[in-house]
Image 1 (spheres, rainbow over the protein chains, first blue to last red):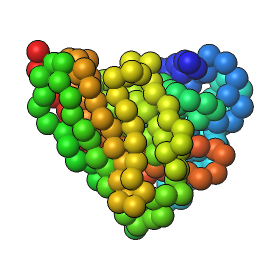
Image 2: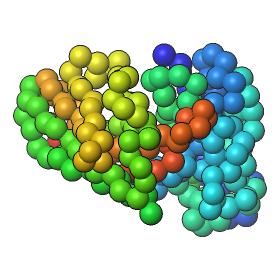
Image 3: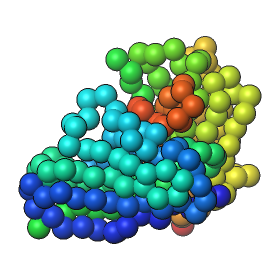
Length: 107
Length: 120
């Protein structure tokens, strides 16, 4: 199975900050990398697919980049609604493994 | 509007069985692959299982292979997860999710989840 590793596991930031979360795959997954946002008690929400494509309705302050084994999710200017947990997931093959998550907290 | 709703969660004893259902609406269910993903209390997301559009291919995560069975009834717009030999570590919220039809493979819609509690 492909292992997905996110860093950091948690992050404290302030409204207006620029934040970057990293995800690494244990083997090349081309651009088959997706990012999800999850808030407590809610289902995950798709933010970014195919490494850099913004899902419809997602604010443009979210962006993704990378290919192969290294990927990043960037939030350009944190808003109060962005404090949540973020997961990467590879869709290169099955099982479609997830990273362990990055919890973004208010500083 | 796309909608997925899970049913069937509840309390079950270790070693027991449970069947989850996911009822889909707002899209042509029979054209989409579907997935189950779970989340143990306070933990991250764990891939459980997937099934292709017509049920001809299925996939399982290592932790559930041989104990869980995924299936679908396209005439009823319903996805199932038959869970057997349940263990304490299977206790989680179980989500069903739709996979997009393009090669990118992301999960674009999710249900609200159903909680499975396993007592020892």
